[in-house]
Each structure stands twice: as C-alpha cells, then as structure tokens.
Image (cartoon, rainbow, N blue to C red; front, side):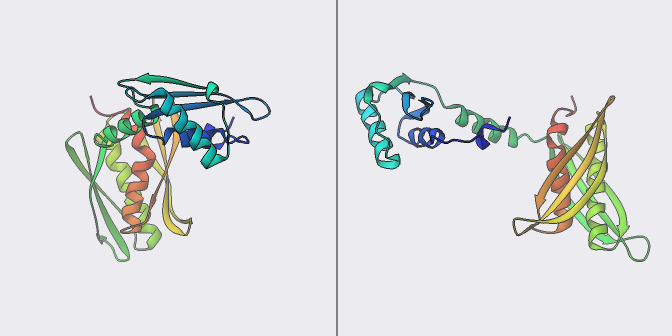
Length: 230
C-alpha cells in the first residue's frame, strides 16, 4: 500500500484538513466523506478559550471561501483542550530534539598528496559521544578516487567508533539529481547474522569529498543511533 501522502485524494479531504489546521486555535482536523464525496462529518480539536460557535463559523467560511465547499454547521463537532499539541507538532519537536543529540558528528576533512605519485590521501575526523576518531584512505588522484577515499575513510572511522556491528563501503558515486550534484553512498552493515544495505545522499555544497562524508553519515545515521556506545 502506498504511503498516506501518496494515496489518491479525489475528494480533496487532505486539502480541507490542511486548510482547517491552519486556522487559529485549531490543533487537528478530520474530515469524513461519503462514497460520493459529500462531507458527512468534520471533527475538530481546538485550544480551550475559543468560542465554539465562532470557531464553527470560521470553519464554514474557510471551507466555502477557499474550497467552494458548503458544510452544514450541524456536521461540525468541536472538542477543546487546554494542553495538547497536534501529532505533527510533537513529531517536529522530537526531530529537532534528536538532531541536537546526533550519534556521530563531522569534525573535519583534509586532502593531501599521497605517499606515491598520482595518489591522494584523504583524512576524515568524526566525533561520537565526545570521543573523536580520525581515519585516512589513499586512492587514485582522480575525482572519483578522492570521493571514494573520503567515503571509505568515513566508514572506517564509524566502524571503530560504534564498536557494535561492522560496516563496509559498497560504493559512492557523484550523480545528477534535480539539476544538482549529489553524492550517493551505499554501505553494507552487519550485526550478528543480519546484513543490510544502507543508502544515503548529500548535495555537493563545498566539495564532492565532503558530500561523500555526509552521504555515508546519512546512510548510517539511524543504524548508528541504535548502536551508540553504552
């Protein structure tokens, strides 16, 4: 079954619900329709302190003005609460909170001549739980070689930092997506007998090598979170 966001919405239910949740004081909205697309029920959760009759009038006016939808006020039910935020807001706050506690943080990237001619040495530093680790990989002095070296170095540092499970780089490539340069990374992660392929992307902003580091972190972030050191 496709995700809810991708499901067909022939009667514009989600559009109506999004409109209603944009109204002042409305925390969440649910619109119920008949098989013919007629609105049969509108359920609203709102902050306490708002006059229910005024809120119903606001809902009627918004639906009529924005969507051309006339709904009988008797089909609108209002529930009020003093201290509830909609699930979307709770999720957003949870994501923001967790982003401040990311398991692995990027510290630095340096590129210098390799030990042999036509080779490059890529050095990557990461921090996990206050512990900083660095790793380096030497590869061909080509655009692809430097990118893959940055990705391999990142995977090597992660493998040492997390201490639980293991991982290895499947590959990293620079691709074009939505008229932008993007690095795609694939990492094979193992824990016990289970092996999974993790994938991640990062837009090239500073350099392809730096984007390769972030693509690996994007691929492994959730897997790393579950295996953060105790």
